[in-house]
Length: 183
Image (tube, rainbow, N blue to C red; front, side, top):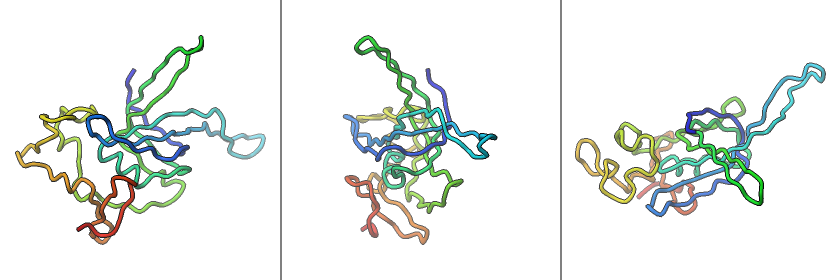
């Protein structure tokens, strides 16, 4: 089953960054989504029925998640729902995963500073073959390797971000943190 879903919840684990065998950067975290309702008898909001999801991001989104999202923060996630089930020791287990298209802070609970990527990668730039599949174009000859206008994509610019003043910041691929001005 694959459906697009929007979830609001909190980041329950630290971000785990890795790379696929094909060299695609990934990042993941567990998302807790409590049901929240107003209890008239108590006169207060109560949380119950916690739902859990594993959120997985790829490519530029993975790097941005590693730099921006921290355990305990309230976030909004948009992506494709993937339901899995398996049997182990006579019990059936179920897991809900989200292949994230977008992840951001829930500004209802706080503020955020936004840093724009200097070389944005949108689904339009990647072409229709890559817009829905995080593994398309992995390993070579695909539309992911060349821009529509025939110019090569600047791989060095993929980890560069701009701050509010337009100054460049470099992404450290090992730690996922922004550091100083890019050379």
